[in-house]
Image 1 (tube, rainbow, N blue to C red):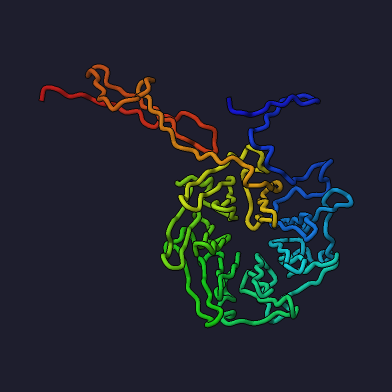
Image 2: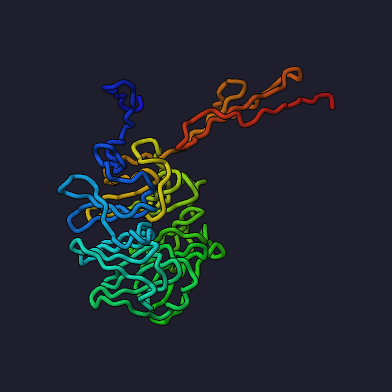
Length: 395
């Protein structure tokens, strides 16, 4: 009926494979497949130029897939032996020149040809803070770096950090994500909403809940250049902001999102895919209809994590969480919108018409049971109201 497959285990037990879950691949700690991976939250994902996956962990450092050993190996950073802040990975990015950039609590790593260079704020005046949460490379090979206390600019061609107009204004802001739109930087902050900085003038505009977006704590951004819409993922949901019209749509858990806390946002054609603390959902760019996925159907866990989202050059989407990461081709998954089907029973009899209900004064109790859609939690009948209707006559 549901298309699920039940599996009898060789050593005993029974398991169920959900329909469609075979399209979702997982990378998780496993004693045989991936014995070296830590049991910890995934915080960042990228691929190198050879197509190998790199994973950054909350407290356990950086791992990469080895074609030679067919498993994941830890990337050794000698500085971590005396400063474990180098093990706290917060961002990963593969630049156009093939170098891999790693944001940590202790500074930045630039990895190329199996060797690395470190960048620390104490030695670089233009780098405002060691904690780095996001990288963005623009069309001029300039790398913009979101710091927990400011923004940095690195010229990949000259291999130097540079200053820019308006930089000093952001030293007191904790930056989670950064994008570039023409001459503007679009900046997501921890608790101060979104800033749009004009790099030619150094002036900026601020978007907050007072401006109409759902939350001031913003985790990620996506700029849709075909519509000039900014998709803003926050503690509150997803806001769609248009440069000419302002906020055109707010999408919350009331509209179908698994959670009001949205961490990652990735695009695929006319869809936006989002990760939350309670699962994955896809949003139609045109209608804004939300389709959530049951977190038990092939995903690493219901809870996904901040910063752990990535789209590769083949269009595969990656989302990481508290147990591991998932990746998949979004075009291979069947999107079936969930339409609410309200079911009402009065005294255990289904109500299918709008006819009035007549009751004698001696039997005037009505029990109403409403079965709504409760997704992704298992559906269940919930008695919403039990009330007494008293029919009064003789007045």
